[in-house]
Amino acid sequence: MLNRLIAKEWIIGMIVWPLFIVIILFFPPPPTMTVTNGDEPHYLIAAHSLYYDHDFATSNNYRNQDYRNFYDGALLEQHLYQFKGRTIPYHAMLGMPLFILLPYAAGGRIGVLIWLSLIMAIGLALVYRVVRTYLPDKIAFATVLFCGLTYPLVIYSQQVYPDTVAFSAVAFVLAQSVTPIQKNQRITALTVGIVLGLLPHFHFKFIILSAILYLFFLWQNRRQLRQNLLWSLGPILLLGVAFVFWIYHIYGEFSLAVFIAPSQGTFANGRVDGIVGLWFDQEFGLLFFAPFYLLAALGAWTFWRTPALRNDAFFLTLLYAGQHLVSGSFYDWEGGLSPAPRYLVAVLPVLIIFAAQGMADALRQRQWIQPIGLALATLWITRLILFVRRPFMFGYRVGTNTILREHYHLNWLTPLLPSFKSLDLWGAYGRLVVLLMGLCGLWLVGAWANRRFFVRQARGK
Image 1 (cartoon, rainbow, N blue to C red):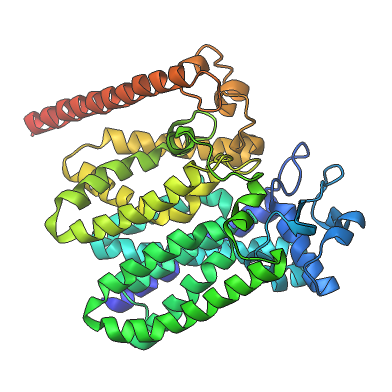
Image 2 (image 1 turned 120 degrees about the vertical axis):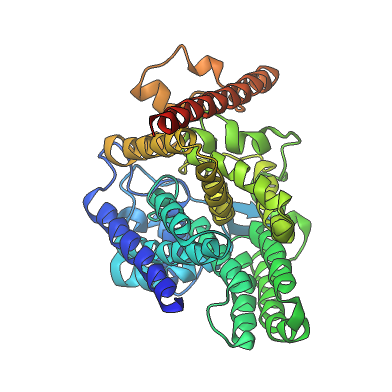
């Protein structure tokens, strides 16, 4: 039985990774779209500087236009700013450039993308390992495979962002917490400590994510708490010291000002627009790109009302909420010119767990129409983004959904949907209420249609 389940983990990886590579090699971005976008060329130029110049100073690389190897747009603006007389990269952490250094040296941007797609494939196999501990194997396999091959994960398998690495790191720690990959608990604790200690080195925003993951790991393994603390705290503390040292090395100090400086002195925007918008903004929200994840709400409710799952529900919800609140309170919550919604990618393992539970609940209650409808809508959007027009995955801060505006020309519909980048925020919240009522209404219509179908089937028998 164990060997069969392990084999299915391999199957997940061996299905998605080759497909990711096919997309990378044979479905490149269209001529109207630059090869790398947003922060991607800046992570690559940092790796370029590390490999060729053996330093982290990229000013000369921007001047020399070394980015021409992986960026085919116009002149790339330097991603640098001044902090108390020092020139600082906007992404000052060393984790991502080091992580992609050898693949970049071996194969340039394509080498990096193949490497990151492998990391994503491993992450999906680990998510499957976690989901099957809660749910039947068929539901776990189908849900994880579906999520891996649809938006946004299928796109982030070929995006040079730390969020892709964070997705797999979260999946790894969750797997080590609920169903350890190896029997030796000391090795388990040690590897968890290393991964959690490294995560903030990709971006300081992952500190809260790491802390909550650590609490979940310790809770799940509380019977061996002393041993787990002994073997995991060492790498966490060591890498924490390295984190402080690196910040001090780059900025000349370790203070709050260091962390808010890249956002022009402010981290939060003082409003909750982004917290709501990450899900429900028509231009940047997850709902409008992957409606399948709505099933996570149903699954989370099942977790919370099941006594045996309530502790796990608490930590999984805390894990998701921590990342969501940190990202949503950021003044640039939409993630700039990156596929929407980038800042939720790191905690999609949690949403996949809950969505799989929601799918199982719906099917058990013979509610077929709603999950199938959400899945088909997500597949259709994925098809449009991958094979029709890749720029559909971006928001352009114009307040309307790109697909509805550019592809379907539904200009009458977009004013009825919420936009949290518009000036009319009260109107946006009003439209959100209407949207939620509409979604509930559609779910109830689906429930009625399911009852009619099954009653008719039963009478036919």
